Amino acid sequence: MNQCKRKILQQYQQGERNFQRANLRGLSFKGKDLSDEDFSFADIRSTNFRDNY
Image (cartoon, rainbow, N blue to C red; front, side, top):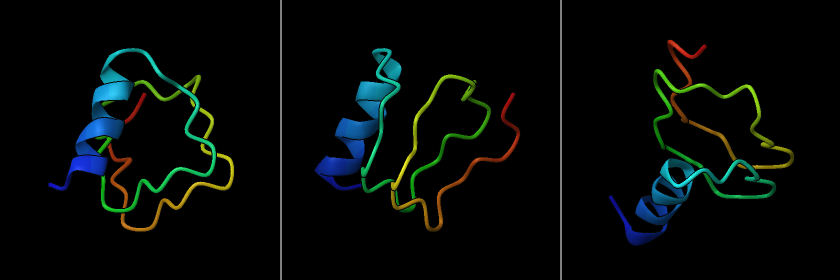
């Protein structure tokens, strides 16, 4: 996993929920609570959102 992807996942774990215009391509948010996230205009191609609540 490249450094940018690691940084985004780390931000998520630290409570960041604003991912507007972020490149989330290929990341996995499997099993995460995404009720407060903002993915407006983000690149979510191939991003795993399975089993979210």
